[in-house]
Length: 552
Length: 78
Image 1 (tube, chains in turn cyan, orange):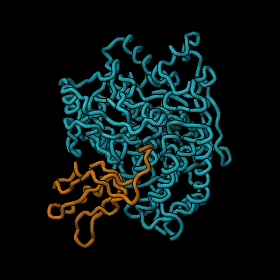
Image 2 (cartoon, one colour; image 1 turned 90 degrees about the horizontal axis):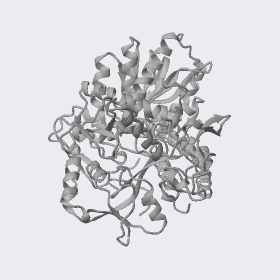
Image 3 (cartoon, chains in turn brown, red; image 1 turned 30 degrees about the horizontal axis):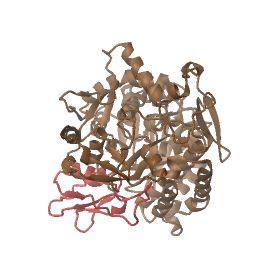
Image 4 (cartoon, chains in turn purple, blue; image 1 turned 90 degrees about the vertical axis):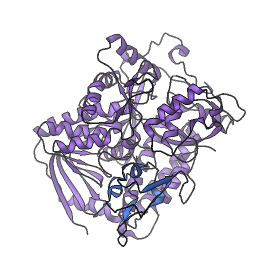
């Protein structure tokens, strides 16, 4: 058995991206003993790596009218299931967080017209990020003010005592040592779930296993691929030039205001109009210039030339759970979850800031900074009043056995194969995007079997594979949450499309889905949205919802 | 984990400083015990974020869009 190291602290922050660093910095500024732990390297983790496009800002010099215009735009695009209080908080505090990041040395750069600010998606203002993004500056700031950083430790479980979260347990990817964190308050800031790569929904899984309520995980974010190779420079170019054609050369209609693709490609594919192409032949010299400028911040990538012309084939590619929407349910604006001692920030916090659709790129990062700072303050205040936590040694032994069991097993299923089969079930467009009750139930049948029969039999040959095993466990839990939320919401809204319920159902589904562990089963229920936030139900449906779903 | 890209390390330039091992978000790089140089140990788990290339102090890491993977990735459609 590996050695066990115990780390005592006031505030433990799990996840070293923007949200986690802000939380750690805020708690440390209050004089507390703060530990920041990450399965990768704080400031360089997966989601932070790809958060290199935009940071949303709302300039406080603008009047209240401008703020209201932004809030209305989010409500309309988010189809009225955003939480306007959180949306307003993120907008109002985005400027201060941006200034703070800039003062820490974050890599912000000038946009096409030489200004720091861009207005690609009116009425929103964004700041472009440079190649290094915000992560390294966040790490440096945290180190400077005395946050204790522990890299390359995978947290597998939260520790509880008397209904309260009192820390976490995990293992080191380098030494294999077991780490027990004893903390007065714990902040989850682990990012979202994309079902592969490193975004494995660890925060949702940890929160769920600790008994927290999860909300709104039926909504998705899609990122179609040009070819199965991921090239960020090309993705950046596509953000400013979104012309697609179907197999017959007919242009694809989509919302021109959005930098982010809606489900329009999936709907066309479902009609039998694949393959879909990104139409570079129709790009004007101005379009090419815009793409080139947009790609500047991604110098160092694989060298896509927007001048090349041609038609680039689009494949169904990455999809993930919608960020700045679902996650652990928060009971206050200091990011406390329902479990005392547990806080959540960033993409694993269920703020419902954006609603059913992500309106503009940059909202996620701003939301991570804002919620991170708030969670840090909330956790610090809680920790200042909390007693020194008492850990149940017997529980620790059980958890430790669970952590290392795949290493000792020596037989069973390889983690990469398990991930392949999960992706084969979930990635076809007719499961994640064009949903139907029958197909969701079919997928759930397989996922339940995998959870019960395959997951407990995964084995790991080394510590790297042990990490994969624990990540895949979390992915399976996230997949089940996604499928159950998707089945539960018997309507279509935003990025949740049910072929068998193709219309929005007002006011029945002016509500958030909520889900919690109930004796080993997932229990779901509805949280009605306060009437003051409803759209005007006397207006025509088409006016309330300008976007049409197929078959409605 | 789907390997999206393959990267390789020029062992004439690599000094074995370990920067890439430390920062790789996919945990795919290790220092070879014999040569004391970085190697891509789990290339099938690389997702092509290029962080190693961006931060390598020697410019020793190259990437190609050609994928290295055991199985083709499941796609939404094709």
